[in-house]
Length: 307
Ligand SMILES: Nc1ncnc2c1ncn2[C@@H]1O[C@H](COP(=O)(O)OP(=O)(O)OP(=O)(O)O)[C@@H](O)[C@H]1O
Ligand SMILES: [Mg+2]
Image (tube, rainbow, N blue to C red; front, top):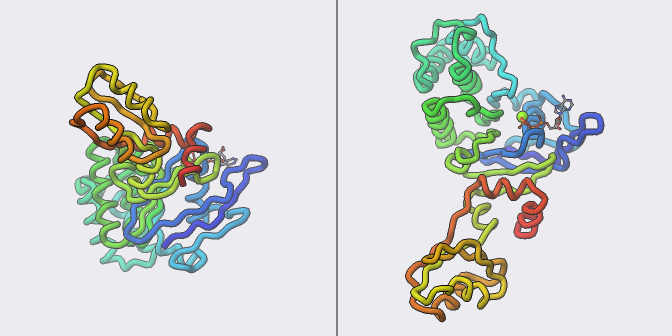
């Protein structure tokens, strides 16, 4: 397990991380999200030892992370770091060898990865001759070529076309299924919602929400879409009937009611009291919506209360 334990870090007067803690399990894909400047890159750099924290510790499988432990990590930095003049396949083999992988194994793995990322044809081209998105694919291959147990990827999906996103997602999913721990930052929240088992939302260097996507979404809101065969005006009646229920939407046929308190059975009873209930379903909010609430003053209070 990767443990970030109470990390704090300042740049001069700027607080980049403020007591940040979260964990990522082997076999877990963890999405790390937050607005620009929230502290994601700072946290990832600390995990990789590129930067020292002012306080706090990072552990992997219970051990404080040092150079030795880090050999088993794969990293895709925000500032992509490939040698532009090197040829793609040679580059991957070179990086694998730096991690102690034997040359033959390195060659085989580089072939495999280039295949998975649809770059087999480009192996003998120089890195600089590839488009930005394809260089990014090579960058992922570079992070993977020594078969790391932990992958830390800083915005791996930015700038990729939809096929690139799918290829990258499939490669990461396969790693996670094979038992690796993967943590990546992203601003593409629909992608995070789709791919990740765990999500952390960071705001001004502090974690304001952490958990599985389902947990976060159900914790954040209790909204129900309700349909009742009753005289016009029933949605308003329903919300007035139940303290702690707000009418969020009313299209004349169905209503969306948010429960601030009470439970769904009380809402159902109140609806039944008005007439036959023909629709009653929880409304799933999206991670994007949740994120907006979590990173504004209003919403983070709500999340912390319910956490
Ligand atoms: N080298 C540095 N010197 C001074 N301040 C820095 C430095 N690196 C980061 N910061 C500041 O630390 C804070 C966190 O930055 P960080 O790069 O970790 O954010 P981020 O979440 O990765 O943002 P983005 O989504 O834009 O990549 C910001 O206020 C940033 O301006
Ligand atoms: Mg960043």
